[in-house]
Image 1 (cartoon, helix red, strand yellow):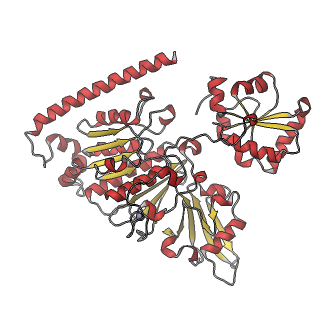
Image 2 (cartoon, rainbow over the protein chains, first blue to last red):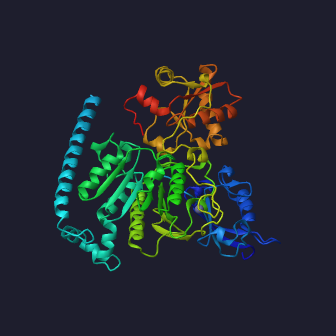
Image 3 (cartoon, each protein chain N blue to C red):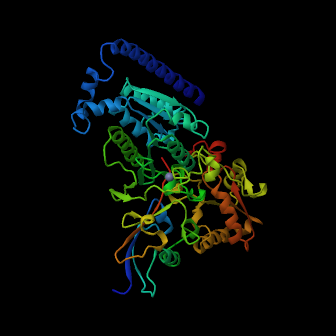
Length: 101
Length: 440
Ligand SMILES: [Zn+2]
């Protein structure tokens, strides 16, 4: 299977609890006319990957406050946030910030 | 009996406090005499003997050790993060440590807050920690603040120190500390831990980002899990707390490689550290930006929609007749064998302790078809007995059980049942009905 865009989605800090308690998902995004961005990835994740309570992950068209998105270990803010164009083999980490001590 | 042994414990504890204070006084008096013999900008004979192992590291040297000796570090929260952080800072020869914590030591703290002991249960955490640290290093100066850090006292306290360590357990205090550190120009070493994961970074250091640059909006309160609900393996905050001390020491020493603009993620599950790159300082940040909106401390509980503690407050979603108290539940379910009892805690908690004959269906699964049919099957066996048939719901403290009642009323609307929850949860059960039931 070479069709589609292969990316690794990772979750941490408790965000994995919304995705079947699995911390690492290797996924293939279907070929599309328009390039995949984090914005379209979030919609895809909501429809295909989210197991429960989407409001705990997504608010509006973006992630809820308190979730940090890292593309290849860099803050997505450095890369254009929702508009970042996803490339093959990207690793995208969604980390929920912890507050306990 | 409990009261007597408690008092005896407290008296023994206070005697220990007295002994330590007397020792501290003698040490200070001796130091004063000693001080006239040695120059204030040189290390003493005792210092050299004590700290030689770290002084001989080129990155530290006598200059570094002097810098530690004259430094002051504030630790906010003397719990799972604050204890190990304080211990390593005291060991390293930091001259002055401030400890802030409003809370007293509880039995459930002892698996991770290792400066406290069984004898110090009920004693303020700042006092208990201060005694332990003094035993380690009697020349350390400690300032104890047995108070909740808030908008009116934070700046006053923070201003007295060179560096602040955030070892707190809640979102509101994290925003408060961030703003206080930005307004008074102090670096903030920030750590957190939950379950098997830890996070660490340094805010407001050397033109790096602050907490608000990265998290302008607080998380919705329902997405925040505290250690009491989510659990935490003691060694995990241990790792993060020690790293917080290390970052503070590196800042004192003027080292490069400070975790500013970076976030260190620690996973105990995979034994891995991951260092990720954060955004730079946000020019339009509400507090550290070019035109800050926040020029004085605000109401952080209101800003976050959550209390500045990790204690759970009770919610009230139900009417009086949808609830039952512990003695009445005992009478009905245990004595008369009436009804069905559903425990909505996690399977792990249910395995730790549960009311006999209760059925475990975690809250997050309660309206799933499998759960509903499981309940209906259980009802069919008994339903003829009573009309409407009582369905009781319990959880740890009586919050989740209320949510469960509302959900069960919907999914069981075709059944002839009366759903009620136990007010005060299993805590109330333990206090009023079954003293052998653990309160956790
Ligand atoms: Zn900022």
